[in-house]
Length: 195
Image (spheres, rainbow, N blue to C red):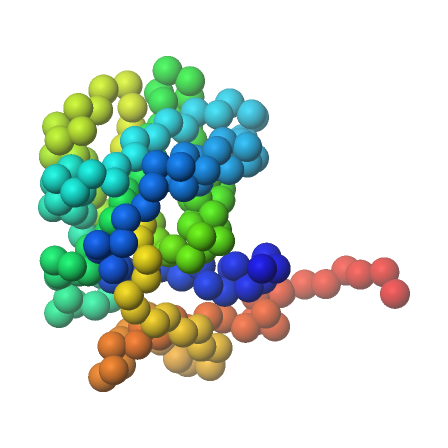
């Protein structure tokens, strides 16, 4: 699959086939790709916790908030929840400023997921105190994000954002998830090119 195809399939999936397990080998491959990626100043301050264990996943799930734009939706129901999680941590002994590293690592993790027919969602709204207790996370590690992973159970489509359209994603009556995206023309605000 070409990179553009992987990027187009790399959506924020929030409903999964929960019973479809993700192997430790695939989870470690995701982290290996993240490890090999770029790091600001090459400090490599990120650490991770992975879980594909159902009992732990249930506890992690309780600490997360899902899809702020979908006000009437409280998150995936049993059977549609993630099959695995990756918790991204910042090691404060290495650095207190993680810069772009979590975003870069998340991209590599999710692109690896797509390559395996999986999908995920980066979650930043976390009850960090509860998650720290559940996973016995040392104080030196700052909880940055949780990536929920699984085989997608929902269809997500991209739409070009028209002028004055709302950027908020939404679900239609068939539960198809729509994600408006600004056009390439709109995001390029200057060009200085050789002819």
